[in-house]
Length: 198
Image 1 (cartoon, rainbow, N blue to C red):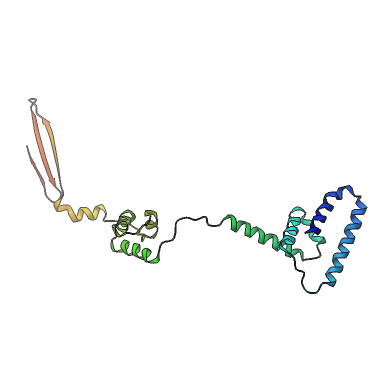
Image 2 (image 1 turned 90 degrees about the vertical axis):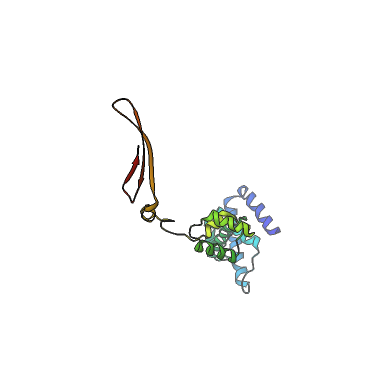
């Protein structure tokens, strides 16, 4: 930690030094690092603070990778990418929301929608509330079995099935040539001829 503090102070006061002196110090530091790297047995152990420092240097001056001797430049780039992934994983973390429902309740919703094809999500939601299940209607709509096509019979089927029982009626006035009004009442059945009375 103290070494890093000295390094920070040296960077702050480096503009006050001459260019030749900075280059000499730079060469000396590189040589010392190379000597330490040759003498080190096994891998060099870096702390998280060391990694963060190198990644920040890479963000500020990407060209510093050419003079990096302690670790491979690809390693610093890998650390940077890992930090980027961790940051966005933290940023896009789940902040709560609606809890998941049990598998049994999901199966019950599907079973109710299969056995009652004319029931929609509001009806199934109401039945589940009567049974004591606390679940939102939007959740029920999510697990209801989707049906494609008309939900019930079409007009042609309806007219074909109910034509013997369908009738229409009308009441209207007819003025005569002598300015009298006749009232007409008309009944029409689809499977019969016209019936009317005046």
